[in-house]
Amino acid sequence: MSTATTTIPGLVSGTYALDVAHTEIGFTVRHLMTKVRGVFKEFSGEIVVKDSLEESTANVSVELASVHTRSEQRDGHLRSGDFFDAENSPKMTFVSTGIKPEGDDYILAGELTIKDVTKPIEFAVEFLGVEQNAYGQTIIGFEGSTSISRKDWGIDFNVPLEGGKLLIGDKVDIHLDVQAALQA
Image (cartoon, rainbow, N blue to C red; front, side):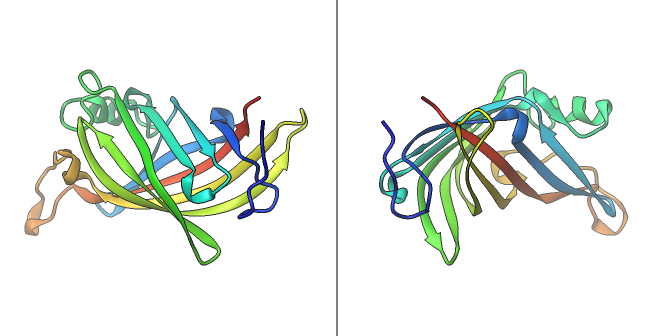
């Protein structure tokens, strides 16, 4: 049974499943003078909201082979051993370790695992609200962002260019646009 939390108006405790049709897990990375943007098409996850928001948790699993950058050739290269090695390490996971308010927003701390390497990260999170959908289900929404060094996870493929420059940037910006539905 759900109970109200006192931190966010309208938010009730319970398990919320990610709505994959209304959620995007994406990234941006520098490539030459532009940026490449991509998303992952297959993922699952849940958010368990506790009566005390600080005790709430989030867990997400992403299928790395589902990467989509609008270029089949690039997507195939990203799936290869040069980058994700999706055949041998098919999933990227995030497991939260804490959440705390920061002004009107939140910091979501957790552990990100890519290619069997686990490192702590923090997402800046903006909570977008609580609503009822057309079926009477409670829906929550939020956006989150962070930046990581891909080399920290052993993803260090690159091509040297003139003047000591590299083809691909090390910094990867990760963005989340999430909608999740309270489960019965």
